[in-house]
Image (cartoon, rainbow, N blue to C red; front, side, top):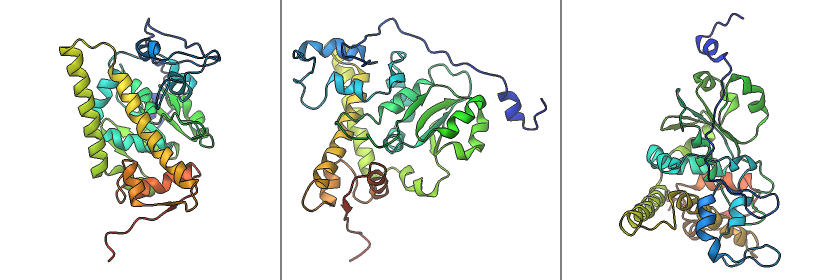
Amino acid sequence: MPVESELERGARMKSVAHTRVLSRRLQLRFPGQYSPLEAFYEDKKATLPPLANGQVTSCPTWSVTNISRCMHPEMKITHPAGCMSHFIRFFGEQIMVLWKFALLRKRILIFSPPPMGVVCYRVYCCCCLANVSLLGVGMSVPELRPFFYVNIADIATLETELSYVACTTEKIFEEKKDLYDVYVDNQNVKSHQSDLQPLLRLNASDKEKYSKLSEQRQMLLYSQEVDGDCTSNEEDLFILFFMELNDRIFQILGEVAASAEPILTAEHVRAMGLDPQGDRAFLMDLLEVYGIDVMLVIDNPCCP
Protein backbone atom coordinates (compact mmCIF):
# COMPACT_ATOMS: atom_id res chain seq x y z
CA MET A 1 0.00 0.00 0.00
CA PRO A 2 1.57 3.32 -1.04
CA VAL A 3 2.06 5.80 1.78
CA GLU A 4 3.01 9.44 1.27
CA SER A 5 4.26 10.07 4.79
CA GLU A 6 7.75 8.70 5.41
CA LEU A 7 7.02 8.50 9.14
CA GLU A 8 3.87 6.51 8.63
CA ARG A 9 5.54 4.23 6.08
CA GLY A 10 8.01 3.13 8.73
CA ALA A 11 5.23 2.77 11.25
CA ARG A 12 3.19 0.35 9.14
CA MET A 13 5.10 -2.58 10.51
CA LYS A 14 3.40 -4.09 13.51
CA SER A 15 5.55 -3.81 16.60
CA VAL A 16 5.27 -5.79 19.76
CA ALA A 17 6.44 -4.61 23.15
CA HIS A 18 7.89 -7.31 25.37
CA THR A 19 7.87 -6.99 29.13
CA ARG A 20 10.26 -8.95 31.30
CA VAL A 21 8.48 -10.86 34.01
CA LEU A 22 10.48 -10.95 37.20
CA SER A 23 10.58 -14.13 39.22
CA ARG A 24 9.33 -12.38 42.36
CA ARG A 25 5.62 -11.91 41.95
CA LEU A 26 3.09 -12.19 44.75
CA GLN A 27 -0.65 -12.51 44.85
CA LEU A 28 -2.12 -10.87 47.91
CA ARG A 29 -4.64 -12.90 49.84
CA PHE A 30 -7.56 -10.63 49.11
CA PRO A 31 -10.14 -11.85 46.58
CA GLY A 32 -9.59 -10.30 43.18
CA GLN A 33 -6.76 -8.11 44.46
CA TYR A 34 -3.22 -8.20 43.06
CA SER A 35 -0.24 -6.02 43.77
CA PRO A 36 3.03 -5.27 42.01
CA LEU A 37 4.50 -4.32 45.38
CA GLU A 38 5.88 -7.71 46.36
CA ALA A 39 8.76 -6.16 48.24
CA PHE A 40 6.43 -3.88 50.14
CA TYR A 41 4.24 -6.78 51.22
CA GLU A 42 7.15 -8.95 52.27
CA ASP A 43 8.71 -6.12 54.28
CA LYS A 44 5.57 -4.92 56.04
CA LYS A 45 3.25 -7.90 56.46
CA ALA A 46 4.55 -8.73 59.94
CA THR A 47 3.26 -5.38 61.23
CA LEU A 48 -0.15 -5.67 59.60
CA PRO A 49 -2.03 -8.43 61.43
CA PRO A 50 -5.32 -9.19 59.63
CA LEU A 51 -8.60 -9.69 61.42
CA ALA A 52 -10.81 -12.70 60.87
CA ASN A 53 -12.48 -10.98 57.93
CA GLY A 54 -9.13 -10.40 56.22
CA GLN A 55 -9.16 -6.61 56.68
CA VAL A 56 -6.04 -4.79 57.81
CA THR A 57 -6.56 -2.21 60.52
CA SER A 58 -3.15 -1.54 62.04
CA CYS A 59 -1.78 0.93 59.47
CA PRO A 60 -2.20 4.67 60.10
CA THR A 61 -2.83 6.20 56.68
CA TRP A 62 -2.33 3.44 54.11
CA SER A 63 -2.48 -0.33 53.75
CA VAL A 64 -1.52 -3.12 51.39
CA THR A 65 -5.19 -3.43 50.50
CA ASN A 66 -5.46 0.27 49.66
CA ILE A 67 -2.35 0.23 47.49
CA SER A 68 -3.63 -2.83 45.64
CA ARG A 69 -7.13 -1.42 45.29
CA CYS A 70 -6.02 1.82 43.68
CA MET A 71 -3.92 0.02 41.09
CA HIS A 72 -5.43 -0.71 37.67
CA PRO A 73 -5.56 -4.51 37.14
CA GLU A 74 -3.00 -4.27 34.32
CA MET A 75 -0.51 -2.75 36.77
CA LYS A 76 0.09 -6.18 38.30
CA ILE A 77 2.62 -6.67 35.48
CA THR A 78 6.04 -6.76 37.09
CA HIS A 79 8.76 -4.35 36.14
CA PRO A 80 12.56 -4.04 36.22
CA ALA A 81 14.24 -3.34 39.52
CA GLY A 82 15.34 0.28 39.66
CA CYS A 83 12.76 1.63 37.22
CA MET A 84 11.52 4.12 39.81
CA SER A 85 15.04 5.36 40.44
CA HIS A 86 15.58 5.80 36.70
CA PHE A 87 12.23 7.61 36.39
CA ILE A 88 13.17 10.11 39.10
CA ARG A 89 16.63 10.76 37.68
CA PHE A 90 15.36 11.07 34.12
CA PHE A 91 12.50 13.53 34.67
CA GLY A 92 13.74 15.39 37.74
CA GLU A 93 11.39 18.19 38.78
CA GLN A 94 9.21 17.52 35.74
CA ILE A 95 7.77 14.63 37.75
CA MET A 96 5.62 17.22 39.52
CA VAL A 97 4.16 18.35 36.19
CA LEU A 98 3.40 14.75 35.22
CA TRP A 99 1.86 14.19 38.65
CA LYS A 100 -0.72 16.93 38.09
CA PHE A 101 -1.68 15.66 34.65
CA ALA A 102 -1.96 12.09 35.95
CA LEU A 103 -4.16 13.17 38.86
CA LEU A 104 -6.36 15.11 36.42
CA ARG A 105 -6.75 11.92 34.36
CA LYS A 106 -5.34 13.45 31.18
CA ARG A 107 -4.36 11.45 28.10
CA ILE A 108 -0.57 11.26 28.36
CA LEU A 109 1.50 9.97 25.44
CA ILE A 110 5.19 9.28 26.04
CA PHE A 111 7.47 9.18 23.00
CA SER A 112 10.93 7.67 22.93
CA PRO A 113 12.96 6.51 19.94
CA PRO A 114 13.83 2.81 19.73
CA PRO A 115 15.15 0.70 21.27
CA MET A 116 12.55 0.80 23.99
CA GLY A 117 14.40 -1.06 26.73
CA VAL A 118 12.84 -0.07 30.06
CA VAL A 119 11.32 3.11 28.62
CA CYS A 120 7.84 1.59 28.50
CA TYR A 121 7.97 1.24 32.27
CA ARG A 122 7.68 5.00 32.51
CA VAL A 123 4.01 4.26 31.92
CA TYR A 124 3.92 2.26 35.13
CA CYS A 125 5.76 4.94 37.10
CA CYS A 126 3.54 7.69 35.74
CA CYS A 127 0.38 5.81 36.72
CA CYS A 128 1.74 5.43 40.25
CA LEU A 129 1.69 9.22 40.58
CA ALA A 130 -2.13 9.21 40.68
CA ASN A 131 -2.71 6.59 43.38
CA VAL A 132 -5.32 7.53 46.01
CA SER A 133 -6.16 5.23 48.93
CA LEU A 134 -9.18 7.12 50.30
CA LEU A 135 -12.39 5.20 49.76
CA GLY A 136 -14.86 6.82 47.40
CA VAL A 137 -12.39 9.22 45.78
CA GLY A 138 -12.31 9.06 42.00
CA MET A 139 -15.31 6.77 41.59
CA SER A 140 -16.86 9.10 39.01
CA VAL A 141 -13.68 9.83 37.01
CA PRO A 142 -12.26 7.66 34.23
CA GLU A 143 -9.49 5.23 35.08
CA LEU A 144 -5.97 6.22 34.12
CA ARG A 145 -5.37 3.24 31.85
CA PRO A 146 -1.80 2.05 31.18
CA PHE A 147 -0.75 1.11 27.65
CA PHE A 148 2.85 -0.07 27.79
CA TYR A 149 3.28 0.23 24.03
CA VAL A 150 1.12 1.61 21.22
CA ASN A 151 1.59 2.04 17.48
CA ILE A 152 -0.61 3.23 14.62
CA ALA A 153 -2.57 0.00 14.76
CA ASP A 154 -3.85 1.18 18.17
CA ILE A 155 -5.16 4.55 16.99
CA ALA A 156 -8.78 3.36 16.96
CA THR A 157 -8.40 2.20 20.56
CA LEU A 158 -6.85 5.47 21.75
CA GLU A 159 -9.65 7.44 20.08
CA THR A 160 -12.11 5.87 22.53
CA GLU A 161 -10.00 6.34 25.68
CA LEU A 162 -10.84 9.19 28.05
CA SER A 163 -7.75 8.81 30.22
CA TYR A 164 -4.52 6.90 29.67
CA VAL A 165 -0.73 6.82 29.85
CA ALA A 166 0.89 5.25 26.80
CA CYS A 167 4.35 4.83 25.35
CA THR A 168 5.31 4.77 21.67
CA THR A 169 8.36 4.82 19.43
CA GLU A 170 6.46 6.28 16.50
CA LYS A 171 7.00 10.00 15.98
CA ILE A 172 3.91 10.30 13.76
CA PHE A 173 1.76 10.31 16.91
CA GLU A 174 2.93 13.84 17.68
CA GLU A 175 0.97 15.03 14.63
CA LYS A 176 -2.24 13.37 15.83
CA LYS A 177 -3.11 15.93 18.50
CA ASP A 178 -6.69 14.73 18.85
CA LEU A 179 -5.38 11.53 20.46
CA TYR A 180 -3.63 13.08 23.47
CA ASP A 181 -3.70 15.98 25.92
CA VAL A 182 -0.05 15.80 26.99
CA TYR A 183 2.92 14.77 24.87
CA VAL A 184 6.21 13.77 26.49
CA ASP A 185 9.31 13.80 24.29
CA ASN A 186 12.26 12.72 26.43
CA GLN A 187 12.24 15.24 29.34
CA ASN A 188 10.12 17.73 27.42
CA VAL A 189 6.52 17.73 28.69
CA LYS A 190 4.19 19.78 26.49
CA SER A 191 0.55 20.27 25.55
CA HIS A 192 -1.18 21.86 22.58
CA GLN A 193 -4.18 22.79 24.75
CA SER A 194 -4.17 26.39 25.92
CA ASP A 195 -5.98 25.64 29.18
CA LEU A 196 -3.21 23.25 30.22
CA GLN A 197 -0.33 25.67 29.65
CA PRO A 198 -0.32 27.01 33.26
CA LEU A 199 0.18 23.45 34.53
CA LEU A 200 3.42 23.11 32.57
CA ARG A 201 5.13 25.74 34.73
CA LEU A 202 6.79 24.65 37.96
CA ASN A 203 6.03 26.78 41.00
CA ALA A 204 7.73 27.09 44.38
CA SER A 205 5.56 24.39 45.99
CA ASP A 206 6.38 21.96 43.18
CA LYS A 207 10.10 22.49 43.72
CA GLU A 208 9.68 22.12 47.47
CA LYS A 209 7.81 18.82 47.10
CA TYR A 210 10.43 17.48 44.71
CA SER A 211 13.16 18.54 47.12
CA LYS A 212 11.45 16.58 49.92
CA LEU A 213 11.18 13.52 47.67
CA SER A 214 14.87 13.81 46.80
CA GLU A 215 15.85 14.18 50.46
CA GLN A 216 13.83 11.12 51.46
CA ARG A 217 15.37 9.15 48.61
CA GLN A 218 18.91 10.15 49.62
CA MET A 219 18.22 9.19 53.23
CA LEU A 220 16.94 5.80 52.10
CA LEU A 221 19.96 5.17 49.90
CA TYR A 222 22.26 6.21 52.74
CA SER A 223 20.58 3.88 55.24
CA GLN A 224 20.79 1.02 52.75
CA GLU A 225 24.49 1.58 52.10
CA VAL A 226 25.69 2.42 55.61
CA ASP A 227 23.25 0.59 57.88
CA GLY A 228 22.37 -2.26 55.53
CA ASP A 229 18.68 -1.41 55.83
CA CYS A 230 16.78 -3.80 53.56
CA THR A 231 13.32 -3.17 55.01
CA SER A 232 12.45 -0.40 52.53
CA ASN A 233 13.06 0.30 48.86
CA GLU A 234 12.78 3.19 46.43
CA GLU A 235 9.57 1.91 44.91
CA ASP A 236 7.79 1.94 48.26
CA LEU A 237 9.06 5.43 48.99
CA PHE A 238 8.02 6.78 45.59
CA ILE A 239 4.51 5.28 45.61
CA LEU A 240 3.77 6.22 49.21
CA PHE A 241 5.11 9.76 48.78
CA PHE A 242 2.60 10.57 46.06
CA MET A 243 -0.21 8.50 47.57
CA GLU A 244 0.04 10.42 50.84
CA LEU A 245 0.26 13.70 48.93
CA ASN A 246 -2.90 12.85 46.99
CA ASP A 247 -4.70 11.58 50.07
CA ARG A 248 -3.95 14.82 51.93
CA ILE A 249 -5.35 16.90 49.08
CA PHE A 250 -8.59 14.94 48.82
CA GLN A 251 -8.93 14.64 52.60
CA ILE A 252 -8.91 18.43 52.95
CA LEU A 253 -11.19 18.92 49.95
CA GLY A 254 -13.64 16.42 51.41
CA GLU A 255 -13.65 18.11 54.81
CA VAL A 256 -14.24 21.54 53.25
CA ALA A 257 -17.00 20.22 50.99
CA ALA A 258 -18.76 18.68 53.99
CA SER A 259 -18.54 21.82 56.13
CA ALA A 260 -21.30 24.37 56.68
CA GLU A 261 -19.38 26.86 54.54
CA PRO A 262 -17.65 24.96 51.73
CA ILE A 263 -15.10 27.67 50.97
CA LEU A 264 -11.55 26.70 50.03
CA THR A 265 -9.10 29.33 51.25
CA ALA A 266 -5.40 29.94 50.67
CA GLU A 267 -4.75 28.40 54.09
CA HIS A 268 -6.45 25.18 52.99
CA VAL A 269 -4.45 25.14 49.76
CA ARG A 270 -1.15 25.56 51.61
CA ALA A 271 -2.15 22.75 53.99
CA MET A 272 -2.50 20.53 50.89
CA GLY A 273 1.08 21.32 49.98
CA LEU A 274 0.01 23.44 47.00
CA ASP A 275 0.69 27.01 45.94
CA PRO A 276 -2.43 29.23 46.31
CA GLN A 277 -1.52 31.21 43.20
CA GLY A 278 0.65 28.89 41.14
CA ASP A 279 -1.73 25.93 41.55
CA ARG A 280 -4.99 27.82 41.08
CA ALA A 281 -5.58 26.46 37.57
CA PHE A 282 -4.71 22.94 38.73
CA LEU A 283 -7.14 23.17 41.64
CA MET A 284 -9.95 24.51 39.45
CA ASP A 285 -9.49 21.58 37.08
CA LEU A 286 -9.27 19.13 39.98
CA LEU A 287 -12.56 20.34 41.48
CA GLU A 288 -14.28 20.03 38.10
CA VAL A 289 -12.87 16.60 37.20
CA TYR A 290 -13.72 15.04 40.57
CA GLY A 291 -17.03 16.88 40.96
CA ILE A 292 -16.12 18.44 44.31
CA ASP A 293 -18.53 21.23 45.22
CA VAL A 294 -16.50 23.92 46.98
CA MET A 295 -15.88 27.58 46.30
CA LEU A 296 -12.26 28.54 45.70
CA VAL A 297 -11.53 31.90 47.32
CA ILE A 298 -7.93 33.00 46.92
CA ASP A 299 -6.88 36.65 46.97
CA ASN A 300 -5.23 37.94 43.84
CA PRO A 301 -1.82 39.42 44.76
CA CYS A 302 -2.21 41.95 41.92
CA CYS A 303 -5.22 43.50 43.56
CA PRO A 304 -5.10 45.84 46.59
